[in-house]
Length: 96
Image (cartoon, rainbow, N blue to C red):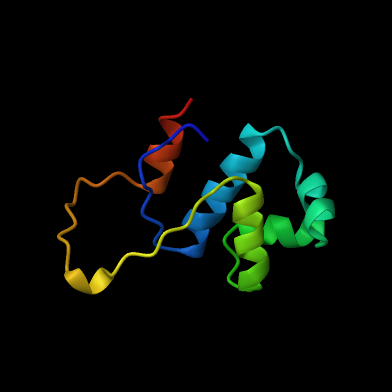
């Protein structure tokens, strides 16, 4: 993934899109990633579709495997969010 700007992930669907984009950009199939992580292709597919049933340790392992860094930010700081903030889809489509 070329995008170096942080992407606000607001849902499991957003995160799934980021993971799918990273996998595809590396030329990997869901089956290849699943084999490497010791999970099923169906599990990878469900994560990429934003299904909420997931093992957090495996999701973090998947993100790490695909080169995605995850950072936590204290959301209680009440940082204003503008309505013109780009969506995950917008940010990912700008990479093409």
